[in-house]
Image (cartoon, rainbow, N blue to C red):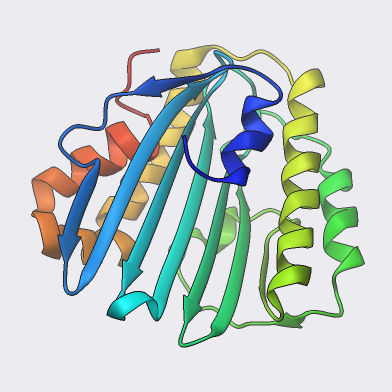
Length: 214
């Protein structure tokens, strides 16, 4: 298990490694990826994907939490550094059956409103983004502090989150994932490296867990 982001989940419940064969590592277009996935505490699928390219001048760190037994939003973290320019995306997606109070996460967002917003390209999934979602640029220390507080607020919500029928929740999660497969820039990039069918399995089973045994 790598990285402090996963440690935040491990502190609140066991992370059970999941099989990501054959994509523990894969490469393409001058980039090398490392992937790991876990079942977290019997309530969510958590994946971590890191990328290095251009002799370390391009780096990406991605963490995705896909709840399947609690009615919580899907959460993704992306930290991208290209030639020293840093971008942080903390995205919360509406895969909910019923509404959830996300005010603790929104409060964290407000604490860092001084950080510069970065525009993102319009996409179909914009309509699913919930209010805590941010895309920021700035110095690494402030971005890291924001990430830690946002993760803490998100993970804290699981303690009182409603239990949910797994089949119903997986249907909501799958609708989002299938949307990415049908029209998502990340899926298109990965499919060019490993092929479209393998990329579908990678997304469904490893990154988001919608094909994983529940």
